[in-house]
Image (cartoon, rainbow, N blue to C red; front, side, top):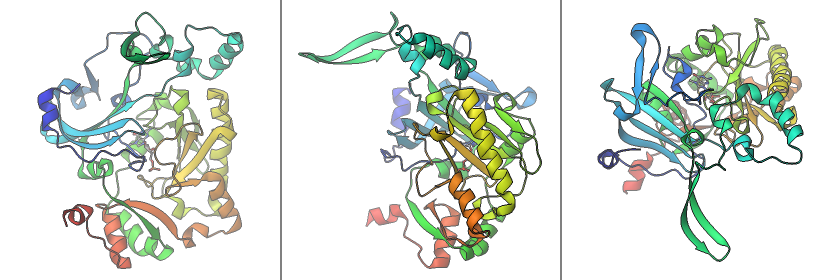
Length: 394
Ligand code: G7M
């Protein structure tokens, strides 16, 4: 909870009540462990007020009590996420940190416990196959216990509104911390005007590609995963083949446990394939392998069939090392919209029909106003827009 004085300090920005601020990406400190992304512990140690990440001389202590918010970057009521820009006063006032808080989804276990139903045996065996290995401390808890209190808002006839105060273990916030955050990270998270740009094949060759060669977000976190330096314990499946291999692991946005929000990422082992634009029929075995093996593994581990999965790629991606997103059809995370998402099945189909499809096609993409790529492409097209802030002042 922010202290009143700190809240006053916040330079409030426009609240984003839509899913439009769907940064299909969030990041973690280069060279640090995924421990920065809080996940519930399997047993119940006292909840620490700080977390030490990294090791030896590189260790950093994230203490939320020392986080001094400077600005709200986004507040998305659809995804129940808020991104705050600030400083950890115990670390450095010269470096920025971004703290992303997300209210987590209900898990069916928490809602079922301790209630037993007629088919509870069937249910339990289905869960034990898919979820038991991912059980969390919070899963053992229930909303329906003596620890849950109901505070009455009002009661009118048979209708009642209450606020439920639950056990803290089932009222956790998924927290992502980026430290130190660069200007590019801040731009990524900031609520700002976004525009749909139609990138032709020529735009890609003359503007996007040179831009990427000059400036793009670091791929260090990807190579850390591929070389087993980070997130090793989170790997769900690995195919070591140089040509068609990949690593499947939970996306940063997923705690890896709440199956209702399943979100896995397949990172290809082969280097140098930046995005959809590089794909040719030579990559069909790789793409088919990701689809087939990814679906098999998800079915056996989480009990979710291929017909319940949205398997897709982003254009533009945030990170230019080819990767495929696996998301649960029931869950609508950021980055699944038509203007950003390309279903893997469609990508495979396009390459089967037209070998140089992705080298020729015009690809629409959404870019932020302050993104240099947006400025460069619109300059070439002669479409540069006035910044939104300036328009608003008129
Ligand atoms: O938009 P794009 O297709 O580039 O999406 C990249 C994905 O990578 C996003 O869904 C991010 O949440 C995810 N991601 C980003 N980082 C920095 C990490 C990370 O360090 N670990 C994992 N597991 N996923 C990440």
